[in-house]
Image (cartoon, rainbow, N blue to C red; front, side, top):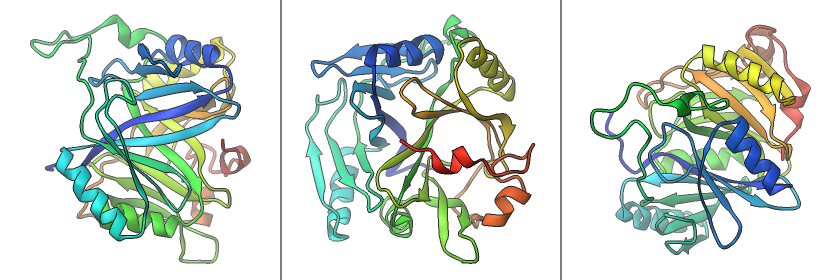
Length: 311
């Protein structure tokens, strides 16, 4: 599958109620590597198998949640093309100069009808991994520091107008719809799992009356065994768990959902199915989410906190 245009999720900026506490959690418990701090006080981190300078940005704030989600695109020409198409579709765009984020080139930002800020960028400093790019090592100690996810994988966002979001992502940004859930007694798609690659999903949306809400950010684990190991580490550090360990029906991935110290939900995720743009999307009904184990295969139930708690 040749990837062009939007390539992959690149970064997310999260708000911390206590930045020092947040850094300790993401660095020492989750096991990310701190890669820099800027004049605005933001802290940058990456996972052990990520090659770019950062994927997670943390900042001090008086409320939790997400500031923006960024995708890497193939070239600066793609930024020009997407900007023109987004403006033609009635969306306001903003160019953010190179260097506003550490080691990151110019960014194109726009606000979705769901209230979320999305960014596209073509350049970020390649710092490599501890394996090396030539004759890479088979193992590095960073794989076992904390929970130790391989990478930042995706986010689930809550907000209104997800039908319009679906149109923007598929018609303009080139994503395809992998799975969806229809609302009760309706054919309206109220939850979307979208891909720019052949992963299970790269971003997801659920309809919600409040705009701009974050449900969770997700970190990819090498295997379900590493998800179980993450559960042990969460227990040892008294991390509050929402769901899991279990397995989804949607995406078929192994999972644990828990909360960081500021109340932002995060996921440790493994496996998952493959999605290709020529395949029709998998359809779920609202009733099937519970009866068919769409959210929780093991318990076949809907979890109230999962459906209602967002930041």
